[in-house]
Length: 581
Image 1 (cartoon, rainbow, N blue to C red):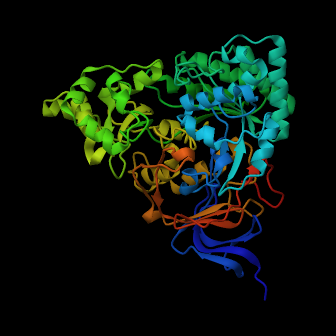
Image 2: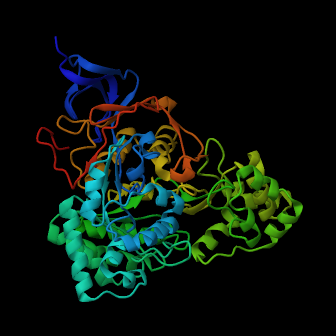
């Protein structure tokens, strides 16, 4: 007798993404769709024994930067190693399309500065077989991957494409420029872009310190993109605010975007050290927007976010010092040997960082808030665990203790410099105030970027362990709600209503998780990018299987080699067979 299903995930504890209580049952799949969820389903051509395991929808990460990586790789790691089955890229107003040939080098330098992707990696890896954004999507449609991916139109390359050098030089646009940006936004969305993105963050600069083209644009230009979405009648808007402004002023522009476009919008939302109580203003603004009927969400990452420091990474507290530059590109062992020289040590300890990018100087100068990350990684150390506090207790200068820590483990030690979601005596991260709001949504993992400085794409594993399984009553998030936050809520935010639920008719993306064994390892360095480029990876245990479009892509964390992931063109409606939650 022929099998009723292509795949049955049998006997697991099904958490369907709606927020409902778990039930023990089976999930039956035909092709790329879930066709039945129940008890005692008939045989599948392939079966997964999920007894004693959780069965969840695949997770949806709406804030990544795989725009380049997808053109040279078939695996969207590290996200795909943490239960993520769909990613949205093109965030923060940066990317690789549209682009004329004479602008490509500038875009590479911009991505190098803003997203910490080495120039040599992009020069060797990105094929540049497109000019317009629709042509970029056509290139992506030919790509195969381990997970699905969707793209947004980024503002900075759009501005330069329309305005040429005037755009790169931050000159104001003409009315004709604004009309063309509006037209191209509509064109991109109609071709399959999920939306448009921009950044007004003053930290977004090239390595030489030049602002990203979108950062200092006038509000009229930001709103021209909103008009493009309105013209298309679809799409979402993603924004990184200017954190130097008063929170109320920042949110006022977000409100204008929502009102002008009539479309959903989301923005980077975290507790900032310069404005420790600013998040309260944003939360109230989000509630006011909801009352007005606007679909505006704040994207939050559920842990302190910041820079990772190390001699084998992009930065550390001495990496911008003049005496460090002659050894900056040496192999790790030679670098460690050089830094153990007493003369070089004295010079580096005496010097101050020198770099045209003021934000980078600030990052490496925060000696009072540097911690040893450790293994397992501790993203929530107490203030007493800082290198500065430990140094004072030992009667030495903080910079000396940091210097010695960088040389530990033959130079492989990784230090943690929190930059956001880290207010208060204890680095409790985005607390329940942010995670508990129905106006926030999980995001900001930044997979595919910050290859030598950040590895936040592991946040689904962290979220399920720190906030759910291992949490005390003061910060516990229940499992059904956590799964909904990782899957259905993120999918809904960007209009992908065909996934994020284990409901008949929905896309067959799911995870089988050994919850008790779920474990997040410390970040580690690999040199496996194009041209031998470096990246940080962060492995996890506990994912027994990941399924994308009905195909098992990972088994016990090991890729099966099957690549069902494809480009998603545009928003997706609720499936006809599905029952809306």
